Length: 79
Image (tube, rainbow, N blue to C red):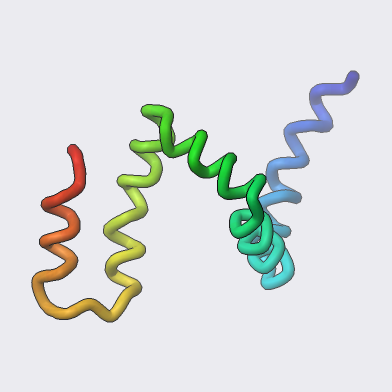
């Protein structure tokens, strides 16, 4: 197997996921039972928890929340 060719796949996958079609495919997968199970398994690992905690503030910034709600949510999360 030519492992050198696998390195180029990351860029192609990243480009696809950055496209509207790729984003739609990712949303559909994550909404499926298999995607939900994968996300739950990932979130249960220390690496997954760290990754998810790093994006929560960005997600909360993108939601129109009443004043103080973002701070309340962030304060309730484990550190």
